[in-house]
Amino acid sequence: MTKITAIIPTLNEEIHIAEAIKCLSFADEIIVIDSFSTDKTLEIAENLNVKIIKRKFDDFSSQKNFAIEKAKHPWIYILDADERVTPEVKKEILKAVKDPKDNVGFYVRRSFYFAGKNINYGGCQRDKVVRFFLKKHCRYQGVVHETIKANGKLGFFKNKIEHYSYKSYDHYISKMNHYGELRGKQYFEEGKKVNLYHILIKPPARFVIHYFIRLGFLDGYPGYVFAKTQAYGVYTRYVMLWLYNRGEK
Image (cartoon, rainbow, N blue to C red):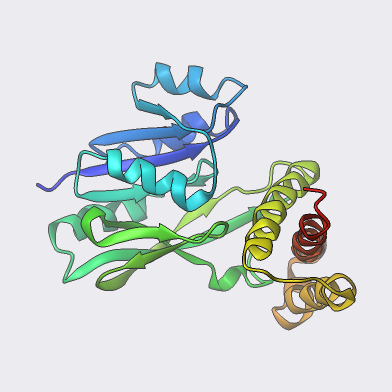
């Protein structure tokens, strides 16, 4: 049977890495590509008998594409450390390997957990990502919130994986700051400028979209916090762009 390489990008994921590796029991090879973690991530991974690659982080697409090139097997499963493959999705993966039906990759939907609650609204109801694909037909593109560029047809899995992105409010804000800096740098390199509209209007508009238009209020207080952090993420990217344009980054 055709074999699978699973890849986990990491940076200080000691609270997630063991469970992430365990949920990939279907894979014939597991690669952890690490951006020089300073916690116990690598110690834990080494004890679980996986292949470890250390690489300085530049952007998400480059990191994942580098690991894909190192994979031994034709099918690739990319797992963020805060995600879990459910038994139902595992069955779909193994079925797809046997009979992909002309698909070169597959979208999988995610159940998003935020502040201890499964978030069903605020845009999360439409959350889907390509996680399983053929190495020879697919690569990542984009600096942050990277996407797969596929040379062929993409299918869909019916079941969802679990996504535990939120450790704490401070952790999530730190993540938004990281994403914002990457996106701000990208905008700067594209020659974009920032004005008051980007700082004063776009962040509140993003909150309105997630909390009201996409029904985030139905998730209660966690839905409010989620919408608030999405707005903060927009604010951060334009502040970073402003700093890059001023030569302060």
